[in-house]
Length: 243
Length: 329
Image (tube, chains in turn cyan, red):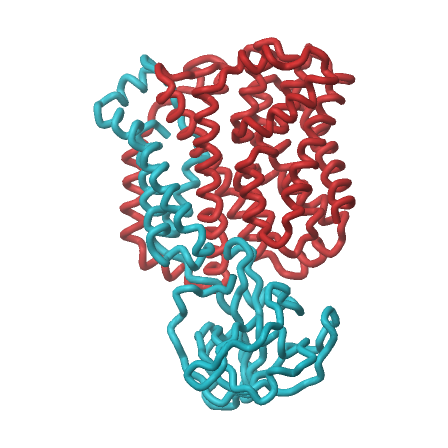
């Protein structure tokens, strides 16, 4: 890889990093907090590409090739060609956020340790909006049974369908980036036909199906169940993961 | 650093491909083939694979960039002669000092091999130069911050990594001063390529290190995505379920993947079936010994050296990481 190509590759990577830093496109892969860092990265990469490209534009490739000046005989490392792979994936395919397939490959954590059992948030539009992790926690471990009789609204995607009975609603919780995401899943009892397709994002309103509460740290025999009263298909949210 | 490990100028020169034109051609063909590519990736397994692959790469990119900017600055502004002069003369003192010095002078691991070579040429005793070589890529602030970001719920991981990597570098250095023989090391094989100005040295080093480390990051991200998205769950669970198998597997993985130390924490974080101790082994072994480093060490110090040094380092790194993991659990 000669110097001009190195510059071109850095410039292209800088451009892609700039787009990721300035738009929501990055949220399928990383936390929103990384966006300013990605923008800064883009600036550095573009700045590093300038000397390489400008010397090429000034027609110095020839002198370089002859090894006559400065970094004569400069060969960029061949392994750098691999950087084309993420570049092209982002430019051409733009991989979507993780979905049902990824959820099916991991078991749901029994306790979502990042969510405590605080008081329920206030009602909005006729139901209490809860994160799936909160519903999982309260529906499994809350000795005060604060979910009993409360109409809640949950948002997630369909990760499994049990025809005629309902489906599993999931959302990934991300620690660092999508590669370490873990699915949080709850069961929805909903016999409304036809069942939603896999990977469809839903807003489901309904009431917790009372069950025996277990002690923190004990294993429940399954995820808590939401008796669905109403479901609405929605677009995938811009921020597909919980953090 | 601004060094090429080419033995004699020009021996690697081949007929040049017009690589810039090749790059442009690849981009154009890929654009035209976009519908075909998109439908290929329509398959859920491949989709998951590509999402994880891109995630690791994107997450690591800012840290990699910060790392190469710092290593470029060090190449341009810190002289190895100064380091060589200031280090104590006795191994017993110089080895730990060099290990600690590694914390202050960040650099990619590929960069620290030629620095160690230059240190040795400038009169630093080999055990101290080697301790520096092992410690600099594993214990510097950029790497520790990246590790903290990758393990937001396990802050002890940062401490464990620092302790185990420092212990590895000092232990290998001291062992080498007991058993190592100077004639195993060839000298004068590294060749510094420095620019006319500090800015040129900086931009050359940063660009070169970025492309090199970035390429290896892609290898690591592909492997991690394959483990997570394509390898059958049962295989992973069996491997991760047995602590000894997990440690062995991740030590081998770290050796084979050769990910840059600024980026490897994100790969380790993605291997969430594996225990924290086995992932610590991954983080300690990776910057100390892997395929790419062995190749660089053969180039810098010769084959006789690398064949002895690599197994020693691997053994010490695994032991240090496992012990640290057990103590800090």
